[in-house]
Image 1 (cartoon, rainbow, N blue to C red):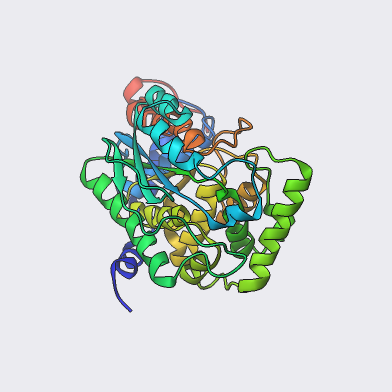
Image 2: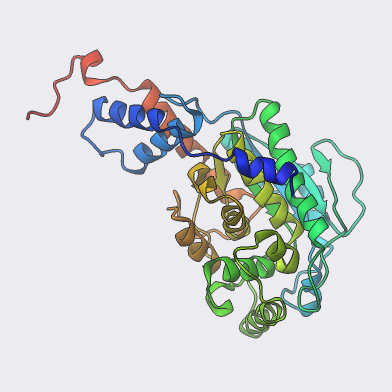
Length: 354
């Protein structure tokens, strides 16, 4: 079968080896002890390999794409928050009243909201992309969350959003999300793609109590027992236990990698999408930068599986893209250091003696 998804997967290639070598050599020539800038050096090398250019361009302008959708598994009592909050928070994003708006303004990033599956009719608004695949998923404990065709459409929607944003001139894509009960679907996806048990990857989400957490773990277990997902079949897994925003984010990640721009990951929802994206195209991890470590336990499991180290650890678990966009200045600093620092030769500074 061929189509946009397959073409995008085929376009995800390795980092540019020559640019990586050039970036490492330049790091060694800068006016500092070797390795003294720690992770900033690694990020700068990665950015060079992504862009096939040394020094790499600054990751700007940047945009947070907040994919919003609802979840049928909400009916299982996995959260005390009503489902209507998803649509209400979309309105809050569009009014620039959410945490991600405030942090994005501070970081100099734009915010784009994508309705990929909100269970309500949203009015047309500036900053809102209406890309609804269906009004929320079905309950994954009773059957597949969506059909294979719907899962593919959601993934390809994410690919198209990424491509459109790059065509508009954005040079860093940041993952955002909104969807009441989406940490339940995230736990199911991460359990499948990392081989973890539900209890190890299911967190407190919006701050649920012990009985609700135990119910949530059981809900994830029931869904996994029902579907027996194969981690080698990411589209089928997304259809069985994923959310529409997870599928769209997986496509968004693939689309960014295919267009050779860095993709900055947020918390557990983004991490769940990323392990799905890696199952489609293993080299996609070369284009991912983990913005922060969510306190949701599934996030750490997913990042370990992806081989990624988060840049920040601030005890956050809000979602929305808030933690990822907070790390944007760090990523930009990595690129700027490689570009703007003087070398020992250019500055007339003596290097380390042999």
